[in-house]
Image (cartoon, rainbow, N blue to C red; front, side, top):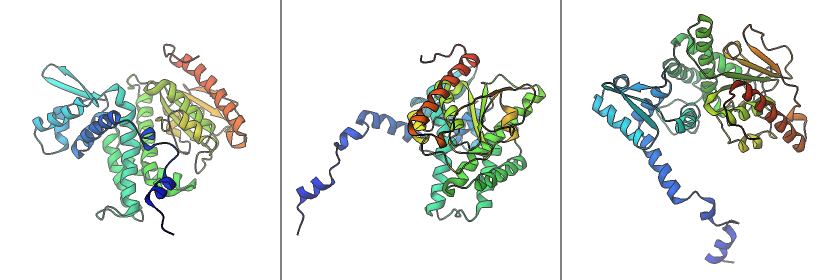
Length: 348
């Protein structure tokens, strides 16, 4: 029997009109304008150079070294990014300095640390780029990642970057799970490790500039309690803290019962969002180390603040129990933030 057009439309119509589920046209226009400004390779490189600069800013003369273009051309590209609000600028004497606008810091971090590696790995796994090798050429990809991190993380040599990238890839591969994004996860994890190592070296040498407090949450699997605590802290404090999480025996993925709670907090909030092993550099760089049920595996170093939070494991809890664990962590995170950032406004 032939199905008529009205019948086919009725069969495939969603419960709610499409227009009710899509973002508004004004919002789409605004977002598309910003994405269009970002859709240029040189602008993306400039943005990454500014975001990873030691002082978080750069001038035209610094950025002209990225490509064989004139300073007026660099200024044009920077103006495009400034006009859409991604960059802010300040004139000092004869030079104009550019930095990521405060409202875009989280988005730029996600773009560089998460979206960019995932986009590249998608090309690798789907074979969309015939000029790239597939994941079978892992060493080639790890060398690429190491070279990128050596250029982005201050005081990092190419040899150190390659060593940490290889160690990170091996450690993440051992924990199991779906390896589709393993190279992208390696870049994110290795980048954190190198940044932590640089901060620890500067701190031990007494040359550390003022920086936001760094908090490390440690549990066994890094798949529940530590993830929730890190996401809550980042949710309330934003870029006023640096958050890390790790596990003594990391799992292959975050617990299914915890994932919806992370989404409620804004999804990828900038906190660690995949299980990863505990490293000495993470402890050395932390100002506060919070342990949750991981025993004595965390190194105890002088000058660090340690707290042990006795909190239930979401892996063993009912849905109601998981929400109760989240509420307990929320209260503990509030107390920690009132101590670390007394001027931070927090909800009652």
